[in-house]
Image 1 (tube, rainbow over the protein chains, first blue to last red):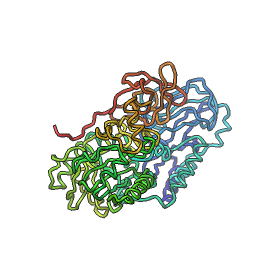
Image 2 (image 1 turned 90 degrees about the horizontal axis):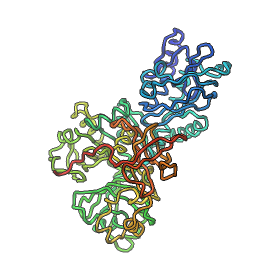
Image 3 (image 1 turned 30 degrees about the vertical axis):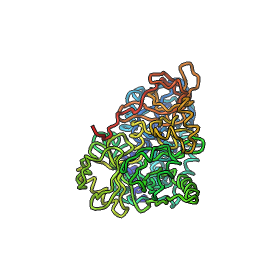
Image 4 (image 1 turned 45 degrees about the vertical axis):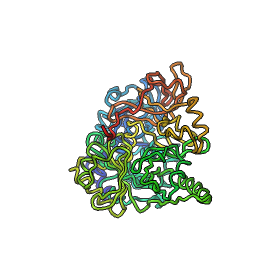
Length: 155
Length: 409
C-alpha cells in the first residue's frame, strides 16, 4: 500500500499536480518543507510560511493560532508561534531565518483557515530571509511526501 | 475521572515540532508500538469504522473516527454518541460483608444505597488523598458492582486486594470477580434512551440517573447503569464480550446513523464541558475529595462516623474548609491546558489549571483547576499564563454546559 502511494505521488509530482495521499493530505509541488511539517513558499527574498495539510489533518480542528509580532526575528528550526486544536497544542517552527514582515491577522478571528486552506488562506507569517542558502536543508514535495508516509507508518 | 491523561495522549499523537520534544515522542511511539497493547473486543470494529487508534493506559483505543472531535462533541449533545469504554475495569464485590468492606475504602454511604442504585465515589488513601474515582452500584446487599479507571486498574486492584486479605483474615465475608469477560459500552445523548428502548423489553423510563438493572438487551443479559461521563442522559452497558460488536452495531442501526461512534478525544471535551474530573489531571493522590469539590459524595452518615481511609483529614477539611478548591474558568487567548499557572490580578500565584481546552459547544475556552480557598468565588478575575503570556480569565461555576441527567420530575 505504502509503496503504491509512493509511486502515485512520484508520478503525480512528475506531472506537476497536487498529490493526495491517504485520501486526505495534499502536498504542493513548488513549496519547500521542513521535517517539523511547515511549508515555505519563496518569492525572491520573501518567504511565506504555514503548516502543511498533513499537519493540520493530524492536529484536527484548529481553534487558536498564536502569531508573532511583525518585526521580530525568527531562526531556522526555532519556534515562532503555536497552533492549538481541540485536542492539542503544537509549536510552529520557522523553516528559515529572518525578520517577520507580515502576519496573517485573519487567523485571529478565523483560526480554522489553517484546516480549510493550509497552503493559501491559512498561511501564518511572511519572513524576509537572512540566508536563502538555508532552503537547501528543506525537503521538496517528493521528499516530504515520502517523509510523511514513513512517519505515519511508524505510528 | 476515567483514567490517564488525555492531554498527554493528544500530545503524543500529534506532531511536536521542537527537536527535543520530538525525541521523547519518538521514544513514546516506540514503546507504544510494542505489541503488548491490549485490544478491546471492538478493536477491529473501530478500525473498520475509521477509528484512529492510539495507546491509552496500556490499551489501543480510538481517539476519534472520521468525524472531527468538534463534530463528535456537538453530535453527542444533539443526537448521541456510542463509546467503547471496555478499557475500564468492571468489578463485582460479593459476600455478606461486602458493604462494610467497601465502606472502609470509599467516602460513599454504601449501606444507605437502595439496592439497584449507585453513586460516584472516591477511593481514598490514609492521607485523605484520592486513589481513584469510581461509579459504584449496590446490586444487592451482598453484591456491589463498580467500574474503575483503566489507568488506575493495577493500583486499585492491589489496594483492594490488600485490604480484602486483612478483612477476610479477620473473618469478613467478601470476595471479588473482575469482569474481564465483559465489555463496556457507553451510550450517551438525547437519543440514548429511545434507541436503547428498541433493544429491550424493560421500560427504561422507569430507570433513573444512577440506577442499575440486570436485563436483556439485544437478546443478551447486560448490566445497565444510567450514568455516563458527558453530562448527557445515557447509559453504560456491560455486555458479554462475544456479543459486544453485535450490540454496538444494533445501537448504531436503530439510531439510523444519528448516534455516532465517538472516541476518547470528544469524550474528554464532553466531560470537561460537564465539569467532570479526569483522574490523573483533576484529581490525584494528594488531592482530597473536599478539595476536588466532591463533598456532596461524602455520605451524611460517613461525615458523622468517618471510618474510611483518611477520614480524619477529610472530616477536618469539612470543618475548617480546604486550603484549595477545584473551580472552573473561562479565559481568552489560547486554550489553557493542564499545568498553566493561575495568578490574581496583581500577578500573585494562586493556583494551576488541571484540564482545559476549547469548548466545541460554547465556542470558547474553558478550563478547570485549583485555586486557594477564598479566591474561588465565581466571578473572581484571574490571569492565566500560557507560554509566558498572561491572559484574562475569570472563575466560573461548573458545569459549563448544563447537565441533562434523567431524574424523576
